[in-house]
Amino acid sequence: MDEEDIEYFHEDLRKVGKLENHVMEIAGVLAFVYKEKVSASFIQYLLPHFGATLQDMKNRSDFEVLTAVCFFSDACEHCGDDVFGMI
Image (cartoon, rainbow, N blue to C red; front, side, top):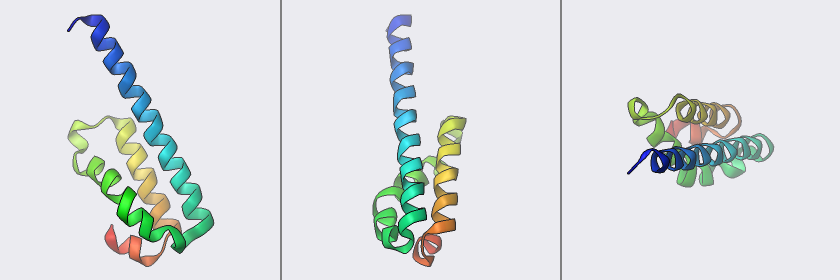
């Protein structure tokens, strides 16, 4: 693996980070608009992913941690008590 391969690898990681940020932003809008109606989907699909990021904070970038914190902030603020109870 040379420097060029490493740069491509880091570029791919940045793309994944952007995608994760978009998912967080869309989830925030869904939570704001649909409130408790999206709670079950959040619990099933999104909480495990963003929760894993926070459980492994030492090995994650600041941007990944911030994205996960923003997701949980939106979920706590806008979703039902069932989501809040899972956090």
